[in-house]
Image (tube, rainbow, N blue to C red):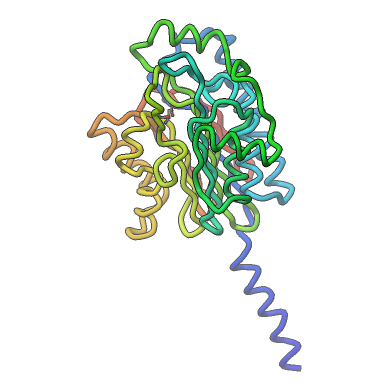
Length: 316
Ligand code: ASP
């Protein structure tokens, strides 16, 4: 009799530990020094519409019990295919007039990660990052080797002209004094309590010499750990690398017990701000709390939670 009573109790305790009972998702489409007058009403509507579409993809996956990993990958793939953002189609141009793409994905449950840098002919770099994570013994592949691996994995290879968009080309021609940003990212918590993060970018306009930013670097632009949070960054990558921004937020939670938003605020609005490192992050913690912190005038962002809370924003 005693035995029969103990089993359900163990099952209940196990479920309490393993299921978060909630899901949350946040996305970004890049941070920058944008102000409302930089855009027409139609352009703002278009950005809002695409952020909403991307968010819906993630919401559908998470609310039907899908994994955080699938949610962040699918959302980022959608944003890579959307020419409005600086990732996949619509990526910015290098100094030499090419597109070199970086992306990373991380699974907070296992701390497995995959990243690619300087990719020139793979349609969806985030998908390649996931293949690196799951089907290779490595964390990061770059350039020609990454393309070769993509081919072996059967991913869609495109001519490099696929990434061409007129506005991005014109922004290179003007060699903007304000570097054009628009990286994409997604973080999610699923119903099983697993966190994941993904980031994809064309990097910074006018970059040269094979420059690689923070986005594909685990702990700089992308990080996820079930013990703390999942974070995706956007901004001036050199600062995010030197200040290991996404891991720093996780470490403040882990070692100092800081709540997610305080940790993100401290890193973005104090540590980075002090050294003029511009940008922001989206983050979600293991309880489904969301933080969107940025020290620029704007960051394309959106989030949704299981309880129905939803937000889409561009400016401060
Ligand atoms: N962080 C990206 C990079 O430095 C750019 C961006 O987020 O806009 O490559």
